[in-house]
Image 1 (cartoon, rainbow over the protein chains, first blue to last red):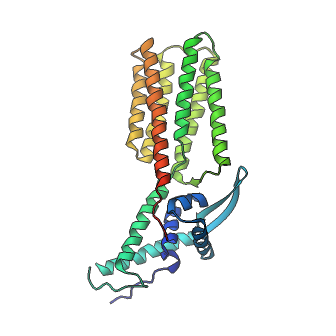
Image 2: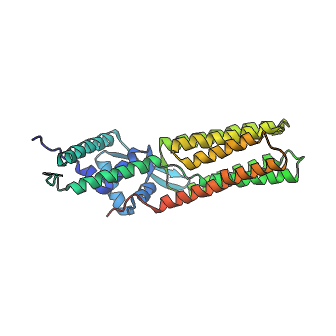
Image 3: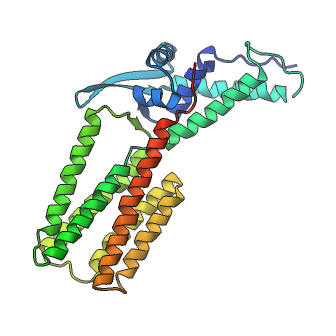
Length: 98
Length: 208
């Protein structure tokens, strides 16, 4: 029996997976939009974004929109590859379960 | 399901939940567009005000330039206020395509209308018909990108109004103009604003 693939623990977290799935459909998104779409809190989202940044899956940029600071995130090529690998692993696992 | 052992501490239900979560959030991200409903309401009201001025003072060539100028100032002010309030921002190919269509339609109509007004060549049904058809084109392109049948119906309304200009005149022409502005701009914009508010109130999923 072939060995089942491992799931990337950084991608597997629910909130991190939601954020990566949101970011894959956009070029960039700000913190407020991500928080609103995920229904998360500032603290929780901030902590998860830091983990994604540390893994190199997202890149962060701080800008000013008028006088208001804005924190923008975009998915990196490494993040795209990680999500694609996660989807592939998920398919294998679910395929094995059917 | 058969022989499925928990893997990485996750059950099959967990994995299926992840798949559902991804499907929902990917769709949400792709559908994200800028908030635009208020701009339709604004321009519908501005155009109705312009027509009211034209009705009151038919000989003045400044009616429309004043109305359009006020509309532009209000739109810039609205955009600046939203930025200042720190409205959430997201950029994707879809939102850029929609912005390009409406932005370039605005430039086209301003060049067309101002040149026609200042050269005194706004007579004939073709002048207004071209404006209606252009707005219909922008709505139709936008409807195709967004896969939004309601906006497709609004495009058809504008095109029908453009065609009707060639068959109607006098008070009927005014009636068509008001119907287009009310249904194709103001009410459509209010509906878009309602949808935007609804989408803001419903996050993808609550996370612990």
